[in-house]
Length: 205
Image (tube, rainbow, N blue to C red; front, side, top):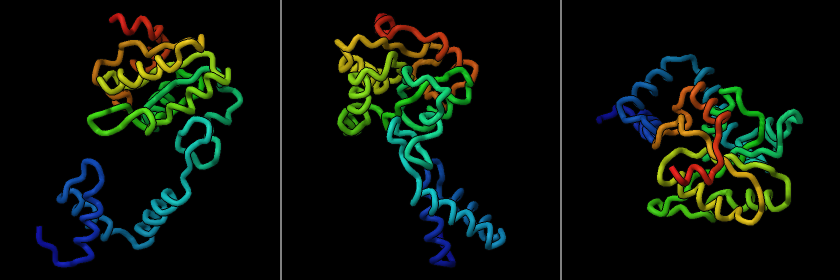
């Protein structure tokens, strides 16, 4: 792709680094921005810079937040004794959109995947185990996607919790194997949370 401007080429190269954005789509987006009023483009740039500079991770659940404690963890009406374990922020958003869950979350930041060089120590697993051993949690709900990596991560955490006496459950298999939570419809996902099953039973399926 030939460019008449190095500035344009640089902007397209950066835009094309985004997931699902190829060079042609990146060019279309950059040209669109060029047609907009300068203050609109400046607002977008400032919003991205502000996001990158000021975003935080909740010190309790590792959800993305503007403050040290996210809105969910700081909400006194939420049930702090029930914790739903998810991969990332997109899963929190998907479950919250169902309106069927009133507990807290714990964001792992990924899944165990030896093929990708991701082990337990690179995820937020240790803080979860520590919270359980501190007696602050009564039930863990595993809500990772039904993939090999998701199941491996669930089982690893389950084994780490042996002897704690904590209740462990997993979302019902209304979510098809291999599906990501963010793509599940809200009704199906809500039912899967409400109709969760003991984790031990899920291993017999």
